[in-house]
Length: 322
Image 1 (cartoon, rainbow, N blue to C red):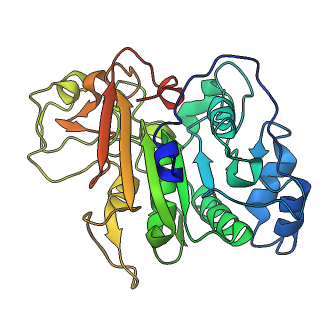
Image 2: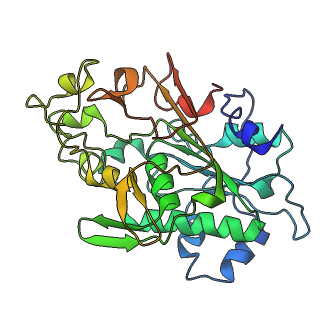
């Protein structure tokens, strides 16, 4: 089975005891420490989050890398590996890959942000996380000497991964950051799980619209020209987006193409050679049927494969085979 096909079959909830797969190996850490300023974000995750906070790297300097490396990007308030019941990370997926001839030298992930779901509404997209993830991806490419990698991302991780791949300048309130040119030619497959590419209707609920997670650097769904901009109206199957797109500015930037000269246009360029969009139609966070003003919010433009589960919540989707 090729690396790409394994990526598309690896989202499985395997039973059994949790095994420690972290943190980064000594060999990978030594590589990162050769350029500590550029790799500060990745090294900080290694130092801050403990055994469950990072994974990846050769067991020894002579370990072979036979498979196309995979980078995992978790969602809001989650963890690289199992940390708690509500921050289960990628442990089961890592175990699945390792059961299919992948080694730790071919599987990489780190933790960003807090790991307490009770504080998730205080999280938003930041330059630090965008730049940090971009540098992490670049470090994996350099360390493994792979021509291409695969990326599997969940929830907020989809937003971060897509922009890290596309590059360009991100303008946020009070800060801007240039990520460099696109690296889509270095990404073979992107599996985008439960992303909110057009925002979340729940952000229209009273009391939520003022939180960072529902703001312009988060997942505000906008009104799309609709005068009745309520959560109920946003979720209706008959709803349409007839007006100017006014969902969160950070999402509009992610959904735009960035060329080598840092110009943006409507999204008609893929983040990878193969893109899969996965979601659940019973996800209470993203909303019934995954709809935001008539659009599937987890659909990445140009996807080669799409699939909507039934009966799974937001946190179960990234551990299930489609």
